Image 1 (cartoon, rainbow, N blue to C red):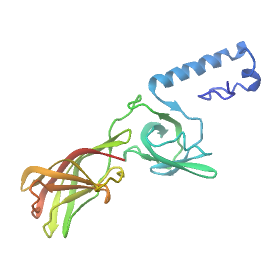
Image 2 (cartoon, rainbow, N blue to C red):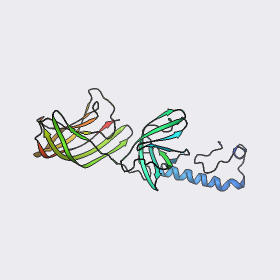
Image 3 (tube, helix red, strand yellow):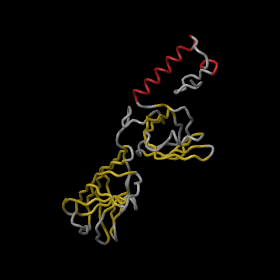
Length: 250
């Protein structure tokens, strides 16, 4: 038994925990520790004892070599300005004397330059309070000499499950320039490169009329590509819609 208990409610000290008994004066603290552990287990979150420092909207720093604990795919919950915020660890790196952790999150939950408190980790798929889906802010473009501008994003959500990213996207905008075959949107999370570079996804488009689309995830260019089912070029003008959903490895 270590002197620092898991949730750090009380440091009992070596003189307390190395013996064969727990003094009566410490029993209330032991009960509190057990209750906190039970609550953490039921809710799926384990509060971490370190001090965390803001680095950017999607990263924070803590002292020591802690890359094993703050590993890719683990869920994160923290508090800033009273509200709970959530994310998924994208990766961590150590450069003495600190570990820097990068997360995936929604723009609503991004870190602010303020005190980070009660940061907790979870390995569960759906721990208590978990939002499920995050929002993202895609950037748009088009292939060839065509442009896709004045775009209104009607739906842009993603979620992470293990090493898989699921996404849903719908947007409407205006094509200009030289007619070409593809409307494009940025990915919510960087995709793992695959052989052949492309992964298909379900897509629909509106080009004068609604129609079945062709969707390809370009893991080299890190783009979602939306084309007409027949491979024809898009018309020029307003009211061009791209919509799709799918998944890929990250």
